[in-house]
Image 1 (spheres, one colour):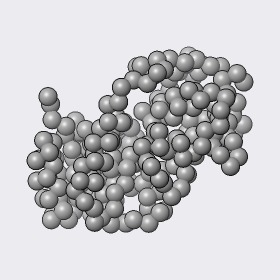
Image 2 (cartoon, rainbow, N blue to C red):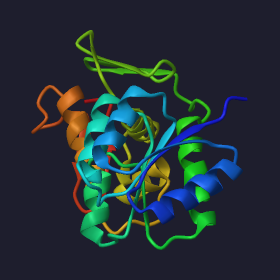
Image 3 (tube, rainbow, N blue to C red):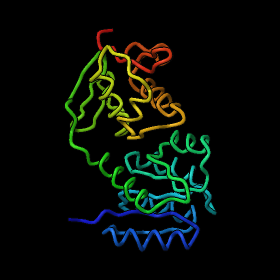
Image 4 (cartoon, helix red, strand yellow):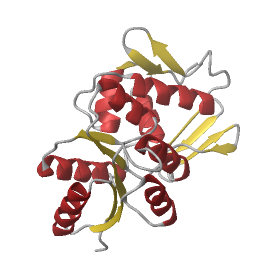
Length: 230
C-alpha cells in the first residue's frame, strides 16, 4: 500500500524534527518546510495527502497558506498546529477551511488520532445517497459533481457532506452542533460560525436568490432546514 504523504510546515526545528521522526515511525512519508513561502509552494506543486500547518511562520502566515491551499486543493486536509489557542484563532482557521485545529503543547497520541480521523473523513465509504435532484439543482454524490441550471458548480467534499446531511433530514430542523459533529467530526466547538459561513457559500452556489433562500432555510435559534418541496 502506498504510504500517505504528510507535509509539515513548522519553523521550530525541535518540533519539526520530533514530528518527522514520529510520523515516519507511523509509516507516513514526510515532507518538511520551515517557512511559509517554501511550504505553500511544496503544498501546491506536490501530491500531498495531509498538511500539518503552523500559524506563526516567516514569509507567509499559516492562515494565508491555508486559504491558498484550499482555493487550489479544496479537499486536501489541513490541520492547524499552533500555540495560539484562543477561540477567535480557532474560528479564523476553521472559517478559511482548516479541517482541524490542535494547540501546542499537544500529546503525540492526540495528534496521531486527529490525523487518522482526517484520513477517515476523506476516505469514508459512500453515504446512503448517490444522487439527488431538486428545483434547478442536481447533486451527484457518487462522483462529487453538482449542477445548477445544468451548469456544473464546484463543491468541496465538506459542502457535499453538508448537503447530504441536510437532504437526509429533509423537512426537519438540523442543529448547527449536529452538523459540526457529523461533517467535521468535532465533539464540541466554542462557536458555530463555521457552519454559517459554509451555508452562505452553498446558498451562493445553489440558490437562485441567496439572500432569500428557497431550499436551504434558516431556523432561528436552531440551525438550518432543507426543504425539497419548495
